[in-house]
Image 1: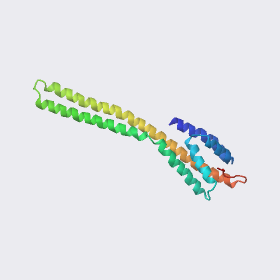
Image 2 (image 1 turned 60 degrees about the vertical axis):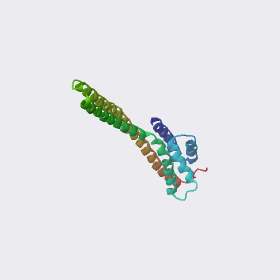
Image 3 (image 1 turned 60 degrees about the horizontal axis):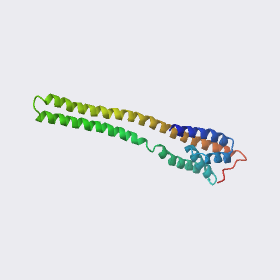
Image 4 (image 1 turned 90 degrees about the vertical axis):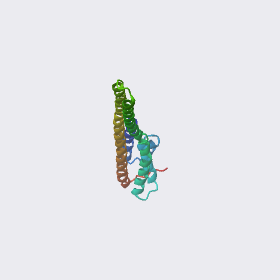
Length: 182
């Protein structure tokens, strides 16, 4: 995730000044040679600008690029939440099985062995609960961190799209500025 954020920032720091100066062709060329997500979104906008009659069409093209990029960023993050839930449920299952074992042992055991069997079964129940929680808590924390980073990346790409559109509109109003040719 950090590499995605860094790539996007580096590419945007190169493309934005070019756009701001009206160097659309150079911005397009630079974006085409990059594998950063923001470059793909800018390419959608620049290529649509060639035949777009309204700025809304460029915006829609960039939203299409965002819609294509976002699922790749969010692709595996939900697995962590699922694993955390499974760990919690497995801990609960172990607790239930341990308690069932405890009550079964107490019901059919020799009175001298009941205390030992009961404490062993309750120990199993508590250990599985602890293991489930020890697994689930870090997974939930990691999930939260990754979810936050993903949201920040998506927000930055949306902000860059808006900045691109505003800059592109401003540059188009200047003389001697033409859209990129594909």
